[in-house]
Image (cartoon, rainbow, N blue to C red; front, side, top):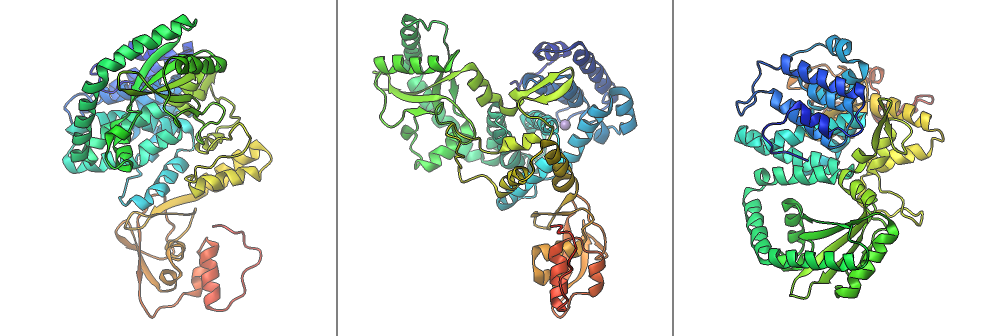
Length: 513
Ligand code: MN
Protein backbone atom coordinates (compact mmCIF):
# COMPACT_ATOMS: atom_id res chain seq x y z
CA UNK A 1 0.00 0.00 0.00
CA UNK A 2 1.51 3.27 -1.11
CA UNK A 3 0.55 6.68 0.07
CA UNK A 4 3.41 9.09 -0.19
CA UNK A 5 4.78 8.32 -3.57
CA UNK A 6 4.81 11.37 -5.83
CA UNK A 7 4.48 10.06 -9.35
CA UNK A 8 2.28 7.14 -10.22
CA UNK A 9 1.66 6.27 -13.83
CA UNK A 10 -0.88 4.12 -15.61
CA UNK A 11 1.65 1.38 -16.16
CA UNK A 12 2.19 0.90 -12.43
CA UNK A 13 -1.53 0.48 -11.96
CA UNK A 14 -1.71 -2.11 -14.71
CA UNK A 15 1.24 -3.95 -13.17
CA UNK A 16 -0.40 -3.93 -9.74
CA UNK A 17 -3.59 -5.48 -11.13
CA UNK A 18 -3.59 -9.14 -10.28
CA UNK A 19 -5.26 -11.56 -12.71
CA UNK A 20 -6.24 -8.67 -14.92
CA UNK A 21 -8.45 -9.47 -17.89
CA UNK A 22 -8.11 -7.83 -21.31
CA UNK A 23 -11.45 -6.21 -20.70
CA UNK A 24 -10.42 -4.91 -17.28
CA UNK A 25 -7.21 -3.42 -18.63
CA UNK A 26 -8.90 -1.59 -21.48
CA UNK A 27 -11.55 -0.26 -19.08
CA UNK A 28 -8.86 1.11 -16.77
CA UNK A 29 -6.99 2.70 -19.68
CA UNK A 30 -10.14 4.32 -20.96
CA UNK A 31 -11.12 5.66 -17.52
CA UNK A 32 -7.59 7.00 -17.06
CA UNK A 33 -7.75 8.99 -20.30
CA UNK A 34 -11.30 10.15 -19.65
CA UNK A 35 -10.52 11.41 -16.14
CA UNK A 36 -7.35 13.13 -17.32
CA UNK A 37 -9.32 14.99 -19.95
CA UNK A 38 -12.37 16.08 -17.90
CA UNK A 39 -10.33 17.20 -14.87
CA UNK A 40 -7.59 18.89 -16.90
CA UNK A 41 -8.36 22.43 -15.70
CA UNK A 42 -8.79 21.50 -12.06
CA UNK A 43 -6.12 21.82 -9.34
CA UNK A 44 -5.69 20.35 -5.86
CA UNK A 45 -5.09 22.57 -2.80
CA UNK A 46 -1.43 21.67 -3.16
CA UNK A 47 -1.41 23.28 -6.60
CA UNK A 48 -0.79 19.99 -8.39
CA UNK A 49 -3.17 18.73 -11.08
CA UNK A 50 -6.41 17.27 -9.68
CA UNK A 51 -5.81 14.18 -11.76
CA UNK A 52 -3.01 13.17 -9.35
CA UNK A 53 -5.72 12.45 -6.78
CA UNK A 54 -7.59 10.20 -9.16
CA UNK A 55 -4.59 8.21 -10.25
CA UNK A 56 -3.56 7.78 -6.60
CA UNK A 57 -7.04 6.53 -5.69
CA UNK A 58 -6.98 4.10 -8.62
CA UNK A 59 -3.54 2.91 -7.57
CA UNK A 60 -4.70 2.30 -4.00
CA UNK A 61 -7.55 0.21 -5.40
CA UNK A 62 -5.19 -1.82 -7.57
CA UNK A 63 -3.03 -2.48 -4.52
CA UNK A 64 -6.04 -3.67 -2.60
CA UNK A 65 -6.53 -6.26 -5.34
CA UNK A 66 -9.63 -4.71 -6.91
CA UNK A 67 -10.62 -5.49 -10.48
CA UNK A 68 -10.84 -3.31 -13.59
CA UNK A 69 -14.42 -2.14 -12.98
CA UNK A 70 -13.66 -0.84 -9.49
CA UNK A 71 -10.36 0.75 -10.52
CA UNK A 72 -12.06 2.48 -13.44
CA UNK A 73 -14.76 3.78 -11.07
CA UNK A 74 -11.91 5.01 -8.85
CA UNK A 75 -10.65 7.16 -11.74
CA UNK A 76 -14.15 8.55 -12.28
CA UNK A 77 -15.26 8.97 -8.66
CA UNK A 78 -15.14 12.78 -8.57
CA UNK A 79 -16.23 13.63 -12.10
CA UNK A 80 -19.98 13.97 -11.42
CA UNK A 81 -19.55 16.24 -8.41
CA UNK A 82 -16.50 18.26 -9.40
CA UNK A 83 -16.64 18.74 -13.15
CA UNK A 84 -20.28 18.02 -13.79
CA UNK A 85 -20.04 14.99 -16.02
CA UNK A 86 -23.59 13.71 -16.64
CA UNK A 87 -24.83 10.28 -15.61
CA UNK A 88 -25.78 9.56 -19.24
CA UNK A 89 -22.21 10.19 -20.36
CA UNK A 90 -20.76 7.76 -17.82
CA UNK A 91 -23.34 5.13 -18.68
CA UNK A 92 -22.74 5.51 -22.40
CA UNK A 93 -18.95 5.37 -22.09
CA UNK A 94 -18.53 2.91 -19.23
CA UNK A 95 -21.82 1.12 -18.65
CA UNK A 96 -24.39 0.81 -15.87
CA UNK A 97 -22.22 -0.90 -13.28
CA UNK A 98 -19.53 1.78 -13.25
CA UNK A 99 -22.19 4.49 -13.18
CA UNK A 100 -23.74 2.77 -10.16
CA UNK A 101 -20.39 2.78 -8.35
CA UNK A 102 -19.59 6.41 -9.19
CA UNK A 103 -23.04 7.53 -8.07
CA UNK A 104 -22.63 5.56 -4.85
CA UNK A 105 -19.32 7.24 -4.04
CA UNK A 106 -20.76 10.67 -4.90
CA UNK A 107 -23.67 10.08 -2.52
CA UNK A 108 -21.37 8.91 0.23
CA UNK A 109 -19.31 12.06 -0.19
CA UNK A 110 -22.26 14.15 0.94
CA UNK A 111 -22.35 12.62 4.39
CA UNK A 112 -20.39 14.74 6.77
CA UNK A 113 -19.02 14.03 10.19
CA UNK A 114 -20.90 16.21 12.65
CA UNK A 115 -18.98 15.73 15.88
CA UNK A 116 -19.88 14.06 19.17
CA UNK A 117 -18.42 10.62 19.61
CA UNK A 118 -21.63 9.01 20.81
CA UNK A 119 -23.10 9.39 17.35
CA UNK A 120 -20.27 7.68 15.55
CA UNK A 121 -21.90 4.29 15.46
CA UNK A 122 -24.95 5.78 13.73
CA UNK A 123 -22.71 7.50 11.26
CA UNK A 124 -20.88 4.27 10.45
CA UNK A 125 -24.28 2.68 9.97
CA UNK A 126 -25.25 5.46 7.62
CA UNK A 127 -22.08 4.96 5.60
CA UNK A 128 -22.67 1.29 5.27
CA UNK A 129 -26.35 1.63 4.43
CA UNK A 130 -25.61 4.30 1.85
CA UNK A 131 -22.88 2.27 0.21
CA UNK A 132 -25.01 -0.75 -0.62
CA UNK A 133 -22.21 -2.29 -2.65
CA UNK A 134 -18.98 -3.17 -0.86
CA UNK A 135 -16.99 -1.73 -3.75
CA UNK A 136 -18.46 1.73 -3.15
CA UNK A 137 -17.14 1.63 0.39
CA UNK A 138 -13.73 0.41 -0.74
CA UNK A 139 -13.44 3.20 -3.36
CA UNK A 140 -14.35 5.72 -0.68
CA UNK A 141 -11.65 4.30 1.61
CA UNK A 142 -9.04 4.45 -1.18
CA UNK A 143 -10.12 8.05 -1.91
CA UNK A 144 -9.82 8.97 1.76
CA UNK A 145 -6.37 7.41 2.01
CA UNK A 146 -5.05 9.80 -0.61
CA UNK A 147 -6.90 12.79 0.85
CA UNK A 148 -5.55 12.17 4.32
CA UNK A 149 -2.03 11.75 3.00
CA UNK A 150 -2.21 15.20 1.40
CA UNK A 151 -4.00 16.86 4.32
CA UNK A 152 -1.18 19.29 5.05
CA UNK A 153 -2.32 21.43 2.10
CA UNK A 154 -5.83 21.91 3.47
CA UNK A 155 -7.02 24.75 5.76
CA UNK A 156 -6.32 23.97 9.46
CA UNK A 157 -10.00 23.85 10.60
CA UNK A 158 -10.79 21.51 7.76
CA UNK A 159 -7.77 19.38 8.62
CA UNK A 160 -9.11 18.62 12.08
CA UNK A 161 -12.60 17.78 10.79
CA UNK A 162 -11.35 15.45 8.05
CA UNK A 163 -8.80 13.77 10.30
CA UNK A 164 -11.36 13.25 13.08
CA UNK A 165 -13.83 11.82 10.63
CA UNK A 166 -11.13 9.49 9.32
CA UNK A 167 -10.17 8.35 12.80
CA UNK A 168 -13.74 7.89 14.04
CA UNK A 169 -15.55 6.64 10.96
CA UNK A 170 -13.34 5.47 8.10
CA UNK A 171 -10.58 3.68 10.00
CA UNK A 172 -13.04 1.66 12.15
CA UNK A 173 -14.99 0.66 9.03
CA UNK A 174 -11.78 -0.47 7.31
CA UNK A 175 -10.87 -2.37 10.46
CA UNK A 176 -14.24 -4.03 10.69
CA UNK A 177 -13.99 -5.11 7.08
CA UNK A 178 -10.67 -6.67 8.03
CA UNK A 179 -8.59 -4.36 5.82
CA UNK A 180 -6.08 -3.74 8.57
CA UNK A 181 -3.37 -2.55 6.28
CA UNK A 182 -5.65 0.32 5.33
CA UNK A 183 -7.03 1.02 8.80
CA UNK A 184 -3.48 1.34 10.20
CA UNK A 185 -2.51 3.84 7.48
CA UNK A 186 -5.67 5.87 7.97
CA UNK A 187 -5.09 5.98 11.73
CA UNK A 188 -1.45 6.95 11.58
CA UNK A 189 -2.02 9.66 8.99
CA UNK A 190 -4.91 11.27 10.92
CA UNK A 191 -3.48 10.88 14.43
CA UNK A 192 -1.10 13.92 14.29
CA UNK A 193 -3.89 16.23 13.11
CA UNK A 194 -6.32 15.21 15.83
CA UNK A 195 -3.87 14.78 18.72
CA UNK A 196 -0.73 16.78 17.77
CA UNK A 197 0.97 16.74 21.19
CA UNK A 198 0.28 13.10 21.94
CA UNK A 199 1.39 11.93 18.54
CA UNK A 200 4.67 13.83 18.86
CA UNK A 201 5.26 12.19 22.22
CA UNK A 202 4.52 8.71 20.89
CA UNK A 203 6.72 9.20 17.86
CA UNK A 204 9.59 10.20 20.09
CA UNK A 205 8.98 7.32 22.48
CA UNK A 206 8.91 4.83 19.64
CA UNK A 207 12.11 6.20 18.16
CA UNK A 208 13.94 5.83 21.45
CA UNK A 209 12.62 2.33 21.93
CA UNK A 210 13.68 1.35 18.41
CA UNK A 211 17.19 2.67 18.90
CA UNK A 212 17.40 0.55 22.00
CA UNK A 213 16.16 -2.69 20.45
CA UNK A 214 17.02 -2.50 16.76
CA UNK A 215 20.44 -4.10 17.02
CA UNK A 216 19.34 -7.01 19.19
CA UNK A 217 16.25 -7.56 17.06
CA UNK A 218 18.35 -7.91 13.92
CA UNK A 219 20.64 -10.31 15.67
CA UNK A 220 17.69 -12.33 16.88
CA UNK A 221 16.16 -12.45 13.43
CA UNK A 222 19.37 -14.01 12.11
CA UNK A 223 19.46 -16.71 14.78
CA UNK A 224 15.77 -17.37 14.22
CA UNK A 225 16.37 -17.85 10.53
CA UNK A 226 19.24 -20.22 11.33
CA UNK A 227 17.16 -22.26 13.79
CA UNK A 228 14.36 -22.62 11.24
CA UNK A 229 16.76 -23.52 8.42
CA UNK A 230 18.29 -26.28 10.54
CA UNK A 231 14.80 -27.74 10.81
CA UNK A 232 13.98 -27.70 7.12
CA UNK A 233 12.22 -24.35 7.23
CA UNK A 234 14.76 -22.31 5.31
CA UNK A 235 11.92 -21.09 3.07
CA UNK A 236 9.84 -19.59 5.86
CA UNK A 237 9.27 -15.91 5.25
CA UNK A 238 10.23 -13.74 8.19
CA UNK A 239 9.34 -10.08 8.40
CA UNK A 240 8.18 -7.70 11.05
CA UNK A 241 5.42 -5.24 11.51
CA UNK A 242 5.65 -2.18 13.70
CA UNK A 243 2.60 -1.31 15.72
CA UNK A 244 0.78 1.75 14.40
CA UNK A 245 1.40 4.93 16.38
CA UNK A 246 -2.27 5.39 17.10
CA UNK A 247 -2.86 1.89 18.40
CA UNK A 248 0.32 2.14 20.46
CA UNK A 249 -1.09 5.30 22.00
CA UNK A 250 -4.40 3.62 22.78
CA UNK A 251 -2.60 0.68 24.36
CA UNK A 252 -0.29 2.94 26.37
CA UNK A 253 -3.32 4.67 27.84
CA UNK A 254 -4.50 1.28 29.08
CA UNK A 255 -1.07 0.39 30.54
CA UNK A 256 -0.60 3.57 32.61
CA UNK A 257 1.71 4.99 29.95
CA UNK A 258 4.40 2.40 30.67
CA UNK A 259 5.98 1.41 27.37
CA UNK A 260 7.96 -1.38 29.06
CA UNK A 261 4.68 -3.24 29.55
CA UNK A 262 3.99 -3.40 25.82
CA UNK A 263 5.65 -6.36 24.16
CA UNK A 264 4.22 -6.21 20.68
CA UNK A 265 5.56 -2.86 19.52
CA UNK A 266 7.54 -4.83 17.02
CA UNK A 267 6.27 -8.28 16.19
CA UNK A 268 8.13 -10.77 14.04
CA UNK A 269 5.97 -12.56 11.53
CA UNK A 270 6.78 -16.00 10.24
CA UNK A 271 4.80 -17.15 7.22
CA UNK A 272 4.72 -20.85 6.33
CA UNK A 273 2.64 -22.91 3.86
CA UNK A 274 0.38 -25.01 6.09
CA UNK A 275 -1.29 -25.03 9.51
CA UNK A 276 0.78 -28.01 10.62
CA UNK A 277 3.92 -26.02 9.69
CA UNK A 278 2.71 -23.29 12.05
CA UNK A 279 2.70 -25.69 15.02
CA UNK A 280 6.03 -27.20 13.97
CA UNK A 281 7.64 -23.80 13.87
CA UNK A 282 6.20 -22.90 17.28
CA UNK A 283 7.77 -26.09 18.64
CA UNK A 284 11.15 -25.24 17.13
CA UNK A 285 11.08 -21.76 18.64
CA UNK A 286 10.11 -22.93 22.11
CA UNK A 287 12.85 -25.54 21.88
CA UNK A 288 15.46 -22.81 21.53
CA UNK A 289 14.07 -19.78 23.38
CA UNK A 290 12.14 -19.58 26.61
CA UNK A 291 8.58 -18.32 26.15
CA UNK A 292 7.02 -15.80 28.48
CA UNK A 293 4.31 -17.61 30.47
CA UNK A 294 0.73 -16.68 29.71
CA UNK A 295 1.57 -15.16 26.34
CA UNK A 296 1.17 -18.22 24.14
CA UNK A 297 -2.03 -17.78 22.10
CA UNK A 298 -3.50 -20.29 19.71
CA UNK A 299 -5.71 -18.19 17.50
CA UNK A 300 -5.71 -20.95 14.90
CA UNK A 301 -7.73 -23.38 17.02
CA UNK A 302 -9.54 -20.45 18.64
CA UNK A 303 -9.80 -17.55 16.19
CA UNK A 304 -10.47 -14.07 17.52
CA UNK A 305 -14.11 -12.97 17.22
CA UNK A 306 -13.20 -10.99 14.09
CA UNK A 307 -11.87 -14.18 12.48
CA UNK A 308 -8.18 -13.41 12.97
CA UNK A 309 -6.01 -16.53 12.93
CA UNK A 310 -2.38 -16.97 13.95
CA UNK A 311 -0.16 -18.48 16.64
CA UNK A 312 1.36 -15.92 18.98
CA UNK A 313 4.16 -16.36 21.43
CA UNK A 314 6.44 -13.96 23.25
CA UNK A 315 9.97 -15.08 23.99
CA UNK A 316 13.12 -13.99 25.80
CA UNK A 317 15.80 -13.54 23.17
CA UNK A 318 18.55 -14.13 25.73
CA UNK A 319 20.10 -10.68 25.68
CA UNK A 320 17.49 -8.94 27.79
CA UNK A 321 14.91 -8.26 25.08
CA UNK A 322 11.46 -9.71 24.81
CA UNK A 323 9.87 -10.14 21.41
CA UNK A 324 6.47 -11.22 20.10
CA UNK A 325 6.37 -13.76 17.29
CA UNK A 326 3.34 -14.43 15.10
CA UNK A 327 3.19 -17.60 13.04
CA UNK A 328 0.65 -17.93 10.24
CA UNK A 329 -0.03 -19.33 6.79
CA UNK A 330 0.03 -17.14 3.72
CA UNK A 331 -3.75 -17.28 3.54
CA UNK A 332 -4.10 -16.17 7.17
CA UNK A 333 -1.67 -13.37 6.48
CA UNK A 334 -3.61 -12.09 3.48
CA UNK A 335 -6.84 -12.40 5.37
CA UNK A 336 -5.49 -10.44 8.33
CA UNK A 337 -4.13 -7.62 6.19
CA UNK A 338 -6.69 -7.33 3.41
CA UNK A 339 -9.82 -8.90 4.91
CA UNK A 340 -12.83 -8.69 2.67
CA UNK A 341 -10.74 -7.15 -0.10
CA UNK A 342 -8.83 -10.41 -0.40
CA UNK A 343 -12.09 -12.31 -0.90
CA UNK A 344 -13.37 -10.28 -3.76
CA UNK A 345 -12.58 -11.99 -7.01
CA UNK A 346 -13.71 -11.26 -10.49
CA UNK A 347 -14.85 -14.09 -12.66
CA UNK A 348 -15.64 -13.11 -16.22
CA UNK A 349 -15.72 -9.55 -15.09
CA UNK A 350 -18.45 -10.30 -12.55
CA UNK A 351 -18.20 -9.49 -8.89
CA UNK A 352 -17.97 -12.55 -6.75
CA UNK A 353 -17.15 -12.33 -3.10
CA UNK A 354 -15.72 -15.69 -2.13
CA UNK A 355 -18.27 -17.74 -0.25
CA UNK A 356 -20.79 -14.94 -0.55
CA UNK A 357 -23.66 -15.62 -2.86
CA UNK A 358 -25.18 -12.23 -3.38
CA UNK A 359 -24.02 -8.69 -3.40
CA UNK A 360 -25.50 -7.83 -0.03
CA UNK A 361 -24.16 -10.63 2.05
CA UNK A 362 -20.94 -8.73 2.62
CA UNK A 363 -22.75 -7.01 5.45
CA UNK A 364 -22.25 -10.30 7.28
CA UNK A 365 -18.56 -9.56 7.10
CA UNK A 366 -19.09 -6.95 9.75
CA UNK A 367 -19.99 -9.67 12.21
CA UNK A 368 -17.88 -11.72 14.51
CA UNK A 369 -17.15 -15.01 12.81
CA UNK A 370 -18.06 -18.38 14.22
CA UNK A 371 -15.23 -20.05 16.05
CA UNK A 372 -14.24 -23.64 15.34
CA UNK A 373 -16.43 -24.91 18.15
CA UNK A 374 -19.38 -23.55 16.22
CA UNK A 375 -20.19 -21.21 19.05
CA UNK A 376 -20.23 -17.55 18.47
CA UNK A 377 -17.66 -15.78 20.54
CA UNK A 378 -18.98 -12.34 21.14
CA UNK A 379 -16.59 -9.56 21.89
CA UNK A 380 -19.51 -7.79 23.50
CA UNK A 381 -18.78 -4.85 21.29
CA UNK A 382 -20.75 -5.74 18.22
CA UNK A 383 -23.13 -2.87 17.63
CA UNK A 384 -26.81 -3.59 17.96
CA UNK A 385 -27.66 -2.75 14.35
CA UNK A 386 -25.21 -5.32 13.04
CA UNK A 387 -26.85 -7.93 15.24
CA UNK A 388 -30.23 -6.86 13.92
CA UNK A 389 -29.12 -7.36 10.35
CA UNK A 390 -28.00 -10.86 11.14
CA UNK A 391 -31.13 -11.65 13.11
CA UNK A 392 -32.97 -10.53 10.07
CA UNK A 393 -31.01 -12.84 7.89
CA UNK A 394 -31.51 -15.78 10.23
CA UNK A 395 -35.24 -15.43 9.83
CA UNK A 396 -35.10 -15.53 6.08
CA UNK A 397 -34.38 -18.98 4.75
CA UNK A 398 -33.46 -18.00 1.26
CA UNK A 399 -30.44 -15.87 0.46
CA UNK A 400 -32.12 -14.33 -2.54
CA UNK A 401 -34.97 -13.21 -0.31
CA UNK A 402 -32.57 -11.76 2.17
CA UNK A 403 -30.88 -9.67 -0.48
CA UNK A 404 -34.23 -8.46 -1.71
CA UNK A 405 -35.50 -7.67 1.77
CA UNK A 406 -32.34 -5.90 2.66
CA UNK A 407 -32.50 -3.83 -0.47
CA UNK A 408 -36.12 -3.09 0.23
CA UNK A 409 -36.47 -2.60 3.92
CA UNK A 410 -33.17 -1.77 5.35
CA UNK A 411 -31.40 0.04 2.57
CA UNK A 412 -33.83 1.49 0.12
CA UNK A 413 -36.80 2.35 2.23
CA UNK A 414 -34.89 4.07 4.98
CA UNK A 415 -33.59 7.59 5.10
CA UNK A 416 -31.10 9.06 7.53
CA UNK A 417 -31.48 12.58 8.85
CA UNK A 418 -29.60 14.59 11.43
CA UNK A 419 -30.51 16.56 14.55
CA UNK A 420 -28.84 19.98 14.71
CA UNK A 421 -26.30 18.41 17.07
CA UNK A 422 -25.39 15.73 14.55
CA UNK A 423 -27.32 12.77 15.92
CA UNK A 424 -28.44 10.44 13.17
CA UNK A 425 -32.07 9.36 13.10
CA UNK A 426 -33.13 6.70 10.65
CA UNK A 427 -36.70 6.71 9.40
CA UNK A 428 -38.77 5.09 6.67
CA UNK A 429 -38.79 6.88 3.31
CA UNK A 430 -41.35 9.73 3.04
CA UNK A 431 -41.20 10.41 6.78
CA UNK A 432 -41.99 13.97 7.87
CA UNK A 433 -40.78 16.28 10.65
CA UNK A 434 -43.57 14.84 12.84
CA UNK A 435 -42.09 11.35 12.52
CA UNK A 436 -38.72 12.82 13.31
CA UNK A 437 -40.09 14.67 16.36
CA UNK A 438 -41.75 11.59 17.88
CA UNK A 439 -38.64 9.60 17.20
CA UNK A 440 -36.64 11.99 19.36
CA UNK A 441 -39.17 12.22 22.21
CA UNK A 442 -42.96 11.96 22.55
CA UNK A 443 -43.03 15.37 24.20
CA UNK A 444 -41.32 17.00 21.23
CA UNK A 445 -43.86 15.35 18.94
CA UNK A 446 -46.87 16.37 21.03
CA UNK A 447 -45.80 20.00 21.28
CA UNK A 448 -44.42 20.51 17.77
CA UNK A 449 -45.51 23.70 16.02
CA UNK A 450 -42.96 24.10 13.26
CA UNK A 451 -39.86 22.68 11.64
CA UNK A 452 -36.68 23.88 10.03
CA UNK A 453 -35.02 21.71 7.42
CA UNK A 454 -31.42 22.64 6.66
CA UNK A 455 -31.98 25.98 8.38
CA UNK A 456 -35.17 26.93 6.47
CA UNK A 457 -38.69 27.00 7.88
CA UNK A 458 -40.97 24.44 6.34
CA UNK A 459 -44.33 22.73 6.93
CA UNK A 460 -44.69 19.77 9.26
CA UNK A 461 -45.85 17.60 6.36
CA UNK A 462 -42.73 18.08 4.23
CA UNK A 463 -41.13 14.79 3.19
CA UNK A 464 -37.62 14.45 4.57
CA UNK A 465 -34.66 13.54 2.42
CA UNK A 466 -31.44 11.70 3.20
CA UNK A 467 -28.94 13.93 5.01
CA UNK A 468 -31.43 16.66 5.99
CA UNK A 469 -30.73 18.48 9.23
CA UNK A 470 -34.03 18.78 11.05
CA UNK A 471 -34.94 21.11 13.87
CA UNK A 472 -38.34 21.10 15.61
CA UNK A 473 -39.90 24.16 17.21
CA UNK A 474 -42.16 23.40 20.17
CA UNK A 475 -44.59 25.41 22.28
CA UNK A 476 -45.44 24.29 25.81
CA UNK A 477 -49.26 24.37 25.60
CA UNK A 478 -49.59 22.67 22.23
CA UNK A 479 -51.16 19.31 21.54
CA UNK A 480 -50.95 16.90 18.60
CA UNK A 481 -53.07 17.57 15.53
CA UNK A 482 -55.28 14.72 14.27
CA UNK A 483 -54.50 15.66 10.68
CA UNK A 484 -50.94 14.51 11.33
CA UNK A 485 -52.21 10.94 11.09
CA UNK A 486 -52.56 11.45 7.33
CA UNK A 487 -48.91 12.09 6.69
CA UNK A 488 -46.92 10.32 9.39
CA UNK A 489 -45.14 7.16 8.31
CA UNK A 490 -43.85 5.68 11.55
CA UNK A 491 -45.86 3.51 13.92
CA UNK A 492 -44.37 5.37 16.87
CA UNK A 493 -45.82 8.71 15.71
CA UNK A 494 -49.18 7.13 14.87
CA UNK A 495 -49.33 5.47 18.27
CA UNK A 496 -48.56 8.63 20.24
CA UNK A 497 -51.09 10.72 18.36
CA UNK A 498 -53.80 8.07 18.78
CA UNK A 499 -52.97 7.59 22.44
CA UNK A 500 -53.28 11.29 23.04
CA UNK A 501 -56.90 11.23 21.84
CA UNK A 502 -57.62 7.75 23.23
CA UNK A 503 -58.20 6.37 19.75
CA UNK A 504 -57.87 2.61 19.30
CA UNK A 505 -54.69 1.54 17.53
CA UNK A 506 -55.11 1.00 13.84
CA UNK A 507 -55.15 -2.73 13.27
CA UNK A 508 -53.91 -3.47 9.80
CA UNK A 509 -51.28 -0.86 9.55
CA UNK A 510 -47.91 -2.19 8.56
CA UNK A 511 -45.34 -1.59 11.24
CA UNK A 512 -42.95 0.71 9.56
CA UNK A 513 -40.40 1.71 12.15
MN1 MN B 1 -11.97 12.12 -4.24
